[in-house]
Image (tube, rainbow, N blue to C red; front, side, top):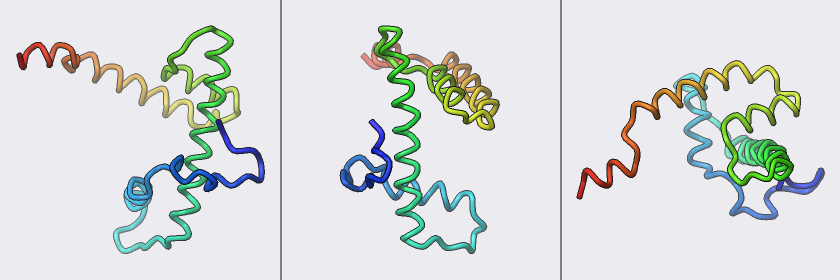
Amino acid sequence: MAAAPGQAVTSNPDRLLPIANISRIMKQALPANAKVAKEAKDCIQECVTEFIGFITSEASDRLAKDDRKTITGNDIIDSMRALGFNDYLAFLQVFLEKRRRALKGAPSSKRRKKEKS
């Protein structure tokens, strides 16, 4: 569940995404010689954690209405649309379709376990 307005996400530091992952993503988007201050990393860490919680909360509400338990990629896209993040939908739909195609071609984890036996 997302933090209430004005409530710091840091009240539960275990809930934050790992700073190393965030740093890696930030560095990939910047020129090689750019540096990122710890304060900026911490700020982004809180923001992306809150954003994920916000989208997931919306998807969870939709699941409860539909009496389902598993959030799908389409649920995330629908939630982002409902919350007004329309600028990201085309990119996410392309990503989701590519991921689905890649997973179709990959052996399932059950098949891999049987093959190892």
